[in-house]
Length: 121
Image 1 (cartoon, helix red, strand yellow):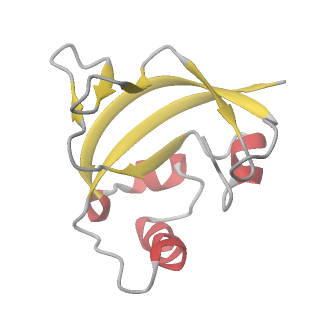
Image 2: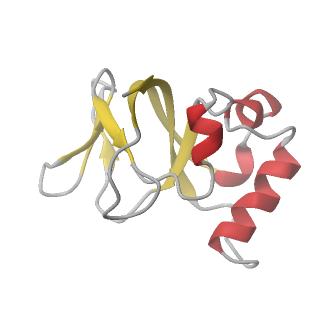
Image 3: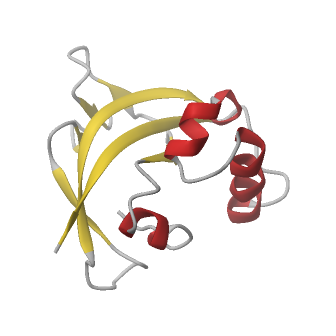
């Protein structure tokens, strides 16, 4: 997974959760363990590890193990979840979200909420 804007927070352990936009055809399986596209390809799976990259095509600097997965609206972030994202408050998180995704980013957009543990290489 690419963490271009929050890499240091992942590496120092202050970020233990990330949000990724839900794309058409993606869904959480009935067993709640993985997300699949319409073609049945697994994208994220609880218990599986994924490379942490500072940018597309860059070498992995760590790995994360997914510990929990759910779907919600971006603007539904709680204070606890904002801290897990590495921010002091939901407002601070949403300001960063808009800076990354554009000032007119839709805060009602659905996202995958991915909780994880960082494993250094």
